[in-house]
Length: 328
Length: 68
Ligand code: SF4
Ligand SMILES: [Zn+2]
Ligand SMILES: [Zn+2]
Image (cartoon, rainbow over all chains, first blue to last red; front, side):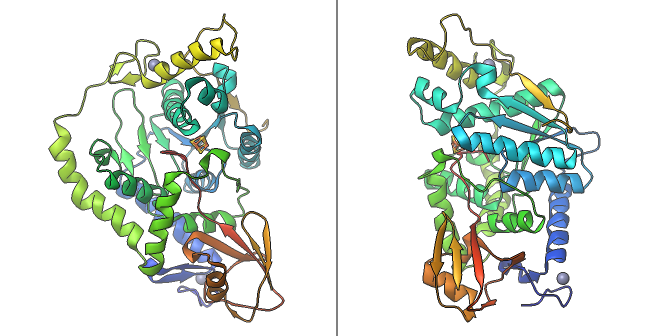
């Protein structure tokens, strides 16, 4: 197969676009498509300050790379989850990437800030690891943005992630979640704008970009990811995609275009006002935010199980550490 | 030819045919992987040779609930 734009051997085939490209033209295409998504949805505007969530996997590192190449100054935020060697290697990969490119990075270590990592949090609350982990990551991304003066938080969600979430929500008709899905969640009081510039790239496309750019990303998965429902949804969608190229994109895009506006209008009046959490000041619909409630409960139980000293009080404010480009 | 598959599996299969036939034999959906030979990414129509060693890299990550 030949590249559509030159005579070189094609290295990436994009069946749903009827396109095949050589390495150089693929990299060019990928970056131009990202720039287009950002422009089209006004994801980043003049004067915005961008924080990009970095796990160390292909999606987040590729996103940081592309944003930087497009001329945006994006600061990385890595949350150290304390999930054994997996988290240690994620930290190494992330700091090496930042160091090699001289990019600014902020690190929040869960155990350092709150005395418990994800496994201990799960043990103390009796909830599955991903529940406390996901909630804490969402909270910390916004809190670090608020404290450090960023108004935009970018994440590396790709088409497979978004289509899988949509499928999960549709299978159970989660009418509370459906109106909120999309490439941009607008800024609200106390909430940074959330953007997903890769939402129209498949995972294979992001992986191809990361490999061709020689990005040393973490291939290993979190041990808690095995058996997750989202993986089953991805598998089902990829079986459809293989037979009918373009299915994933049509499923997501047509929902966003045709269905979501109707849903949002129908449910629009119910949008709840945000208050400040009485514990930490973060935006919340109740009196105390979900993060503070989770960790309050975790602290009570962790003390009983002697995972934390009796004297330790829960202090919501995260300890954000700046890793200067030359350190790491 | 030798195929290095995810989870450190190494397999010996017949070469001299298009990559997609090799993937089909191994039950791998081409949409979920990137296949590499040396520094080069292979499209599914590439003819792989008997003496080739290719690496199949999983592109699928997940299980994080709502976040990467
Ligand atoms: S798989 Fe679950 S526990 Fe692991 S990083 Fe993702 S959300 Fe956290
Ligand atoms: Zn070309
Ligand atoms: Zn709070």
